[in-house]
Length: 336
Image (cartoon, rainbow, N blue to C red; front, side):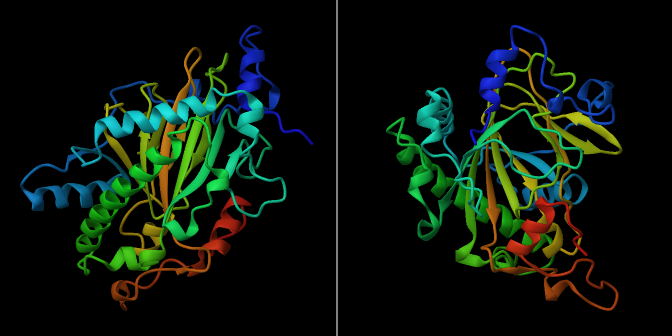
């Protein structure tokens, strides 16, 4: 059965100003109704080049405790490399359908790698206004190049270079977060699997939508990952849920947006928040984003770190192998 891609639906919808019913959200989700319109609190921004390392660490920890999301600037990933990453990703999505389908996720696949459209079960059977490409970029032992685009030719080189930079940045942040819990610098990285932590690249492609007031690019969710490091293009769309409101996230050129995901929430026994977020779409412009998810390997059992557990701080979360946790969450099954 041929899968209809949102990019093709977008092309045929733009002349009619109508979108298929399965993309129209209920009133409790429609962005036109639910987005906060007053003064918007700013998501914390942390300058990693600040020579006062203690101040940087305090800012990262505070943002992770209170928001579960922050933006980092002067993070060490060259601006030029981010531009190249975005260029090769955009070029792939502008290729003819037949070329994109050559790296499509197989219909019977248990894994999420490849070009695709639907990711998870939605309770009301609704669809998200997005196509995507998933592939692991680190460690080399889990990279499957059959899901990496062959075109443009520089796609592989750019992504391999980006992987090294994103790995370094992620380890810096995990170290700060570990010490913020009063633990060794390696504690959270080891809790996610140490050298076996997998770095999953995703490209989100949100084509123009004639009814951005009714649709969502991605519905409200928290990330399955430990942490997520994301760079967006210049088209706004990320929204964060805080204090019972949906707020637009500010776009800062060349910043990396850091999400605390479910596994750091669980390893920290709830000390760090997993951010609830969603994506809106634009009527005239294509939004894209490049999140990299730091995930435990499939068999890794993740639960609250033993060093944090005491009579006064009992475990709040049940340990799960990551494959079981992912399956249960994506299929809307209980997690307790």
